[in-house]
Image 1 (cartoon, rainbow, N blue to C red):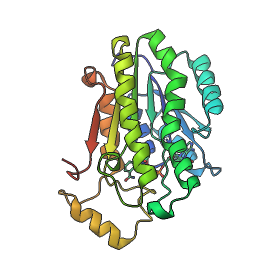
Image 2: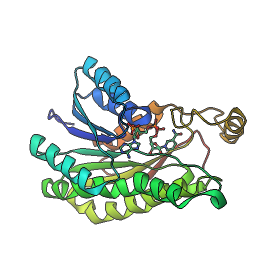
Image 3: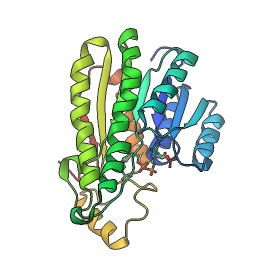
Image 4: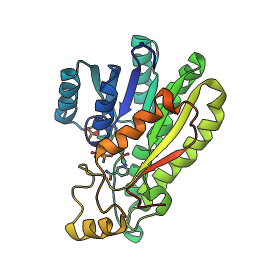
Length: 248
Ligand code: NAP
């Protein structure tokens, strides 16, 4: 990378995988913009503090990424303040698990809105400017479940499979404009999202992973960072799996 300060927007950057991504980028001293939604700002405040200790300029915004107008407004503000967004990481995501026959319409709609429509919203808000500038990196966090399926996660699996199709399509549309568009599909990663999983289910999951352990947020962050580096300049439209061998 040359010496410019890249502007990096990370949705769901307040904790878990998003925070690890922010910390991985911190080493190049970019300008980081974190988006999260929960009313409680303590997680994003800790991330900002961790970044500041590394000498990184960062801001956090409390915006629901599933709402088009709010995302459009936020990205327009970032663009007018800093002139360019070099990297967009679509990482925000939630689960609302239930076996399909018990899954409500609200479970379905909420997960599709937060996990998939948000990717449309954020990408839409940034792509025109990236095309104009003829540079940009977009990485969206999918999931192994989007490819394998998982009982109780019809909504989540559909949202994550949607990200894969979206990624390949946008990658084709802008490949000639200096923009790469990729997805990272984590397996079973140690974050707040996977904390509530009962011990019995956790053991069963681990039994399916050839490496026999969960991944850490940093494992995913490293892959995202690499996709946004010069080393990956010729990689686009790919789904990179980070799952300890769970899916081969
Ligand atoms: P996490 O610890 O629960 O963090 C989720 C992040 O998303 C938080 O920063 C949260 O911020 C933000 N978020 C949720 N809803 C939002 C909304 N409507 N608008 C803006 N931000 C929102 O989850 P994680 O495990 O790090 O997961 C990160 C991504 O990786 C997700 O897309 C997830 O599906 C994917 N993934 C995770 C795993 C895993 O095993 N952990 C595996 C595969 C894929 P607030 O709480 O402040 O809203």
